[in-house]
Image (cartoon, rainbow over all chains, first blue to last red; front, side, top):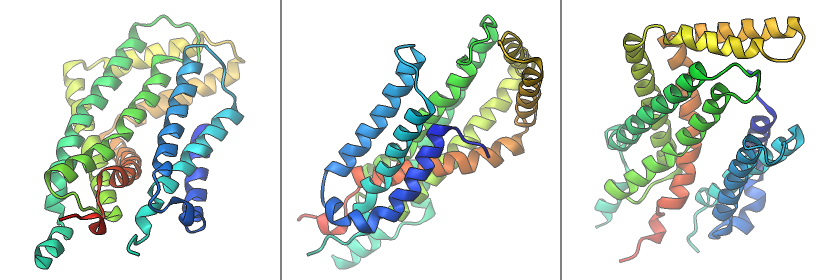
Length: 88
Length: 193
């Protein structure tokens, strides 16, 4: 199935994010910033799409890919905490 | 006490369905209503040849709206059944929500074709008229029209809608439900007495 630049970025980001979970666990476990990052990434998608729709700017394939990648990456990072036992 | 805690962690499908079913049904109706509203906007719009049409916008809007259903299902589950939820359990709730959304919206789509039997044809005519107004080579235009008409016609069957809708909405909501577990769920070691 063909996907556009934004969706390709999201899927690639999701894959990269899953693979990065063990590497970034030290930075993400029991921290609030991953969820905040997820909301920022989601908000950026909405702003970018709406701005383009309303004619404020014209987004490019590169901007769609970059923002999609950022959003895709933010999802596994946001939930990475759940893969670890927080008991000390 | 230990037994109660252990029991509360093992939920069956029956525990998931109320949250997934209620939220799925609500979002199924919302999805159907948004799709229908954009569909009639497309039908009543003038063919300008613009790339951004109600048809293209509706896909994005529906996708955005549907994507939050999984997280809301998890919120419902944590507030009504148990706040202690594992990532996998959240994923199941999300997937079931996607299934419920698809089934409800497909059912409502079928009902709507009894209410307005010419809807698909009118919609197709509007989409083709907009493509005709586009400034592009005739050959490319014909290919675009043929592929779009074919995808809308074949995508009309119930089996096709379920075949594509369940995995798409299921996976989308599975991801959002996992984020929902992170936001709304509690881990057992976060339990306080």
